[in-house]
Image 1 (cartoon, helix red, strand yellow):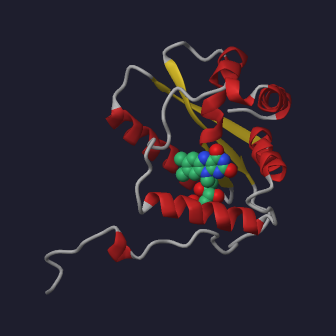
Image 2 (tube, rainbow, N blue to C red):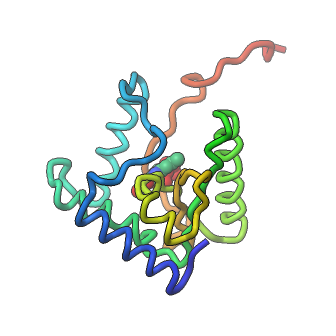
Length: 175
Ligand SMILES: Cc1cc2nc3c(=O)[nH]c(=O)nc-3n(C[C@H](O)[C@H](O)[C@H](O)COP(=O)(O)O)c2cc1C
C-alpha cells in the first residue's frame, strides 16, 4: 500500500517510463485473449466508446487518450495506491482466489465510505515496481488499485449491465 511521498515517487517513476519507453513494458501475464471473441469484444468496444465519450475524448485522439492513460500512474489523484502481486508458482485457481480477495478489499472500502478502481495497467510496469517496492522475484504484479473518497456519491453507472438471462440460466425455480 502506498501513500504520501512513497506513492508520489512510484507514480513519477511509472509516468516517466510510460512517457519515454511505453513499448518496453509488458505485463508478465496476458490480460486479454489474443483473439477476443464475442460477446466480450463488443462489450469492450462499447466500454471504450462510453468511457471516452464521458471524458469528451474522441476515439481517434490518441494524444488525449494517452493523457488519460497517464492518469493511471498517479492513481487518478487518489490518496492511497495499492500494488497487488501474486506468487507466480501458483496456478489459475489462485487467480480466482486473488480476484475474490481484491473484490473483498474493494467492498470493504465501500463499507467504509471509500471507493476504489482496479487497474491492470500497473502489471506492465513490473520492471519499475519490482526494485522500487522490493517485490520478490517469485511475485508477479497482477494489478494496482486506486483508493480514496468519492467526489460524488451514488453517481450513475457508466457501463450498462447485461440482462441476467444473458449470463445465467435457471432450472428448478418453477415452484
Ligand atoms: C480487473 C480490472 C482491471 C482494470 N484495469 C483498469 C486500468 O488499468 N485502468 C483503468 O482506467 N480502468 C481499469 N479498469 C476499469 C475500472 O476499474 C472500472 O471497472 C471501470 O471504470 C467500469 O466501472 P464498473 O466496473 O463499475 O462498470 C479495470 C477493471 C477491472 C475489473
